[in-house]
Image: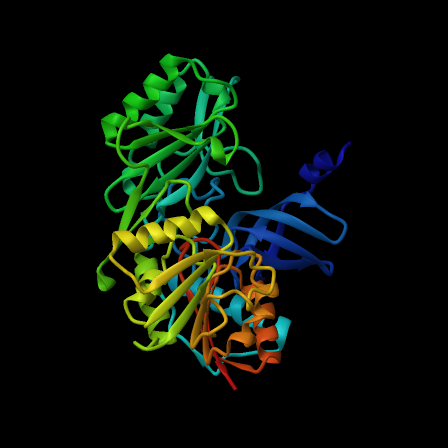
Length: 442
């Protein structure tokens, strides 16, 4: 009998859930051994079935909730039990926020022995139909003679069989079944492994990854579908550099979103990084500028600036803003957006952000204030050089509480106080923790 067979043979077990893991699974113990339980909340008693047995811990899935937590709610999505796109839909919104705040606080304490002097109120917005960017898997299942489009199943590499998606922008979610039908009818339906989805305020784009060249009839079918929806259609035969638009034939390969509080509109290519949640992004920008408080005569540095999401709003308030990005194409996109919005007090530069760049001509004058929005890996290297600029205040926007906490410890060593911090619910119903922190020179 192999390990899977032995696991399946284990009888269900009743468990008291005493906590929640950082990935949103209930925590319990059996004979002293930790067990992670899918779809279980703290304070609940559940009947669970073992799914994996490991040397140091086990995993299980809930079969029945026998004592229900007051934080449990009915998931808004019919596919929650199988789809891995969300993991917290069974938890109330207030409990989700409390969980994310606790994760952030634990990381601050664990990595740097830190706590902010003040906790900011959580930043929240719509709980459904908020997601404007996503990568969906595609799989034609020969045995079922059926094509699937969706996120991965929970704890699995299989594509979840979903008909709609509660968190996706409704323009996309409402057409998932129609999209399945179109791809099912293609000659090379089994050679399209994924679709990148991107939406702006006034448009949607689909990027179809394909492993082999598509016959003209397949391309025509995809173009006809996108044209019927008023969407842009792109193909990706190889790496990211191979992405090219096939519909419309003319015009710019751009989508856009407005920032009305700053009188701006930002343009982006469908493959560019943009925030997935437009409502939270607008609120986040207002909060970031309020916390940073740039003044008309000051110089401000925006690191990991991307296409200018923070840089351009900052330029409407500060005297001069410098945006720095590791990729030249994104620095070029930032300048493009500055020109489109008639801003002349902002410049963008491409720079290796793991190296000391304080010697660069645009950096020698120093900066009064600084904003940083790094990737999940954080900004360990660049944080070491930040004190050279003499900024009195730093606002750090983070998508990973562990690396934020690590970098906060480095800033503390450099003489900065952690003044404020809080969570922003960018990815509602998931365990993803987006946060913001303010540091001031001690």
